[in-house]
Image 1 (tube, one colour):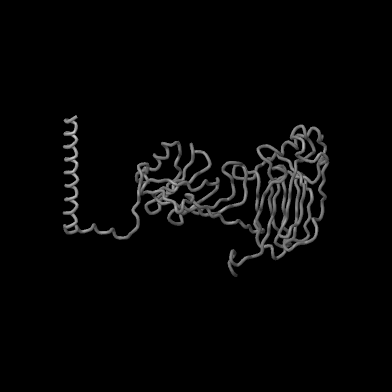
Image 2 (tube, helix red, strand yellow):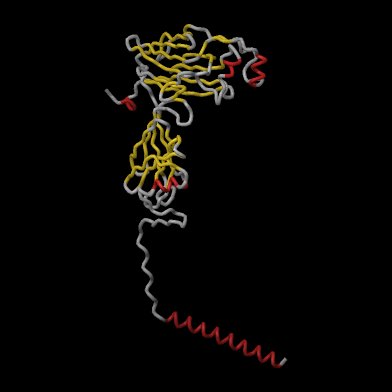
Length: 354
């Protein structure tokens, strides 16, 4: 017991000595002159903070090999300052794709896919403007021409303003000159498809305040024609426009379309497509030929008629009908495709002043 007490005494003595030494050191430090403070950093832009995953800088010559290593085929590389726009495909097939590549870090940002007939140009840092003729790269269909601008929002290090998306896309609404021929529909080998095996019937046609509206159902003459309406997806019939400037007559031709059909058995139709898709008493169905009604702001003397395997709509354009566009949609759970021809007046802000 005495030995334990003695050992305890010396432990307390060593602890007291250590505390005293610390107190003395603190007192001396307080009396010493203060050391000069480190100079504050001057204000300026924050330096980039690349991560370990960040790619290394790249050159134009290196880009094709980098893409090919991932199974892509580079079509073209365009330089802009220290950066690049790479046009490429997967395995050499459509669609064509565009990336913006930062030369400083090798960072790639996907811009957009391009339709088969699209062209593009670099208009600024991280900015590309594109135009198309409307030919789809994924389906044999020609629609409205398009144009737009896609912009990269991230920088070379992947920083995004306020956690936004990496790119933004601004498209320009397409307005067509009614005096110029226009085709929308099935497309093959750079021209309208020679044969179209999809048969349709006009379900409704009418004059709107700013144009014309049409909707369509299957041709009900036979199950073969009825079924031709549905492969892949229902869509409006192919159509083309023309214009007679002397009479100001605008003509719309709807291919493989009729005003009247019937003959297919209702029970057979419902067994094939399902009950309730169309009304039981839909066929035989007829839309009357002749006038579509009173004149409008843009149209006069509008008539509709069958012409062989097609339906033809004619209208006299008023002087106010300066440009038109096409809007497509689908009704009845995608079983009644429809479209509108929409006209507008001349707009000095869009079209310029004479």
